[in-house]
Length: 501
Image 1: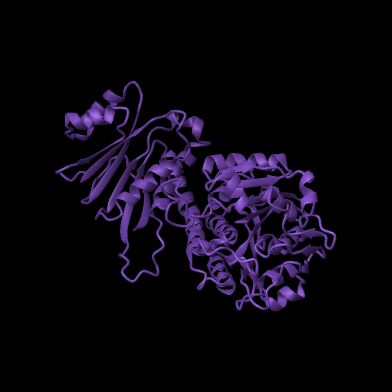
Image 2: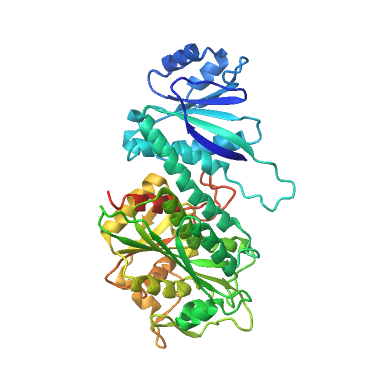
């Protein structure tokens, strides 16, 4: 696609050759007059058919060529502010737009952001309103074609934004560029094939990328994992020729003027999940290259936080394994002793993510953070319950639940809270161990969360995010269709940025 360069446009627009300009008109009582005013100001000619089609209920866009090349083409898009409008409107619209012009020889894109006053109820701030336009350009521009022999060379595209508040616009551009570096890194990790991205390579890529930003990264090899008695990680990784890794990331950005607060982010890092001895059906098994999405989100979020210099302290914890069947694999009926000392009866080796997270959550708890948030492509049951585009939210902390839910509504990395009631505990009880790793057919996402709860210090505020649906490519909108999505980075970045507000 394009190599993007975002800029704040001058008050007086100067169009260079090979330019496209995008304008938005709000569908209201004065739409016809707004269109006529636009025609006069831009000195374009529209046919009656174009006018009537645009003003009709079904019409939404006009593409106009300008023979004087100032600009070469104009796009007019109609905005309908009704009960279907959301904070994702411009993000999704521009993601589709950039994809549609991807094969064109455009060099300059000019986007005029409409007045914020019309959209106040949908966005937390004017700056964030601006950012959704920029995020759409980045998200729609993403492609993963590194293994294609005949891939097209990337072209430079300078994108100019025009808005009422120049300072907020400049801030929005800087913040978006930093954030989307993290999102892009996450998506690259998710989309990498599992024959390349084994646990050791995942650890190397995270370490090398984050160290460039001054972030501390430690990687525990198999010997160190054994020394630390991380039986969950060792058990799941035992069947593979690619040994496990345990990645610890420390970002220290807390500013002195704020109350010091440590947030631990824990991410499931299964670089490929065959199901192990309890092997999965072959259909769609290839998607399991992205079973490390939780890990990728943690790494991408910390990268974005470091680039943006967010004034927070973050501990990232990533257990990484490859779950494969072999003569050395862990088996149903096995009992695994975790780093916490608690034992797990293995009912199903395809419920492996929670087993490695048992050691990771215990490790995070021992650091005594104020908050622990874990992310995992944990259960198909959550996708059945909520669909492919919403993550499951589990916590007993109502304040944390409210913060994450509201942030998800804004970023459109949306969450829906499911119960974490103790009534479900009996489903994961066993006579031979402290807990078993599968709770039966019903409420599978809930019993998985209840399992994880066993390994978190009860004094620490904790939330579990099941991202099994939205992490994967889906048909929900223009920027999730082709590739693994990077879901969760924008959510966590916004949550972390708001911590000291």
